[in-house]
Structure formats: structure tokens, C-alpha cells
Amino acid sequence: MRLRRGFLKIVSCCILIWPFAAWAGAKFLITEAPLDKADAIVVLGGSATYKERAHEAARLLHEGRSQLILVTNDNMRGPWSSAEQRNLFFYERSFEELRNAGVAPQNIDLAATPVTSTYDEAQVVKEYAQQHGLRSILIVTSAYHSRRALWVYSRVFRETGIRVGLISAAESPPPATWWLSLRGWNLVPTEYVKMVYYLINY
Image (cartoon, rainbow, N blue to C red; front, side, top):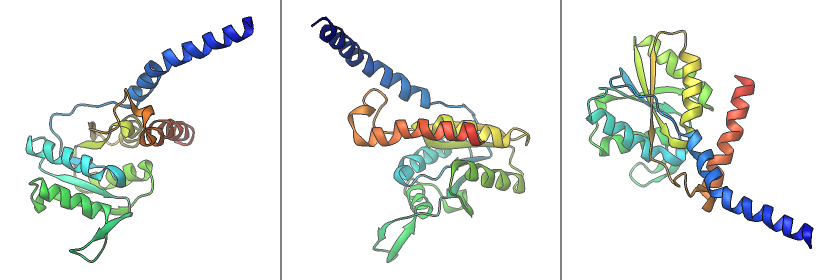
């Protein structure tokens, strides 16, 4: 009986603590590195969140933070396009979202080299920045991806003299309730696994 009561107390404490621990764990993943002006706004690839990232990049451009939006190529195709009669690449979908948000085509460019990871992406962006003489970039990515992205880009760009800023696009579910949805479980715990992998390998 005493053992059972002790077990119930432990379970009750875990239930009470879990929402706060889950919120803190999600909030830790979200970070920003402010940069008032940049030579380019870089929209990182992300098939599930390309709309949010594109809209945030468009907002920043309209604010005058930069005159160039650079989109990376994750080499993944999205849903069928009736207009094009093919499955568009997600970078093409990002272009559509940017144009629909009022960004002129001459203000959009593509880092065409396909990438398969955030580290590969940072290397491609660094090469583009050096070739085009960029002195600063402002990264736009999803909130839960932001801390790992900033760590990777800061590491890749650390000896280039190029300033790196980062803005987090709005992402759902919010940190307080991510654990109540399947999408949240696919985002937050997975991101911690990726962070550990990056810390070990890069």
C-alpha cells in the first residue's frame, strides 16, 4: 500500500511538471540573431514549412532589411501543379509564394546546388555569398529549427568575415502545446536527436 502511494505521488508530480518541462524544451530550440540589414535574406529549404518561411522573407524584404532573397534547393518535389502539369520543386513553390507576396522576380535568386542537410545547405550558401561578394546574410527558417541552423551557419561562416543573422518564422504547434499533437512530436524530439548528431559529427 505504501509503495503504491509512493508510485502515485511520483506519477502525479510527473504529470504536473511535464507541461512546464515540455514548454521549456521547445522554447530552448527557438532562437534569433537580430540583423537590421543584410545583403541577402536566405530562405532555408523545408518542404513542410516553405510557405511560412517565404512569407517571413517577403515581410523582411518589404521592411527594407534587404533587396535580395536567396532560396536554397532541397531537391524535393511538392504537390501536382495544374498550371505546370507537373510536380513542382519546393523551391519553385517558394518562388510562387514570394511573388504572390509582392516580391519582384529580380529580387529573388536560387542557390541551385541541391542539398540534403542543413550543413550542406550552409556550405552552398557560403559559396554563393563568397562568389557574389556578400558581407552579411539574414537566415529565415522555422522556429524549432532555428537553434541548430544558427549553430551550423555560425560554424561554417566563422572565418569568412560574413555576418550571419537569423529570424524564426512562426511555426505551429506553439511551444506550450506541441506535445498535444502528432506534428509536435515529429518536430521537437526529432530536433533534439538532430542536434546531438550535429554536435557529434560537425
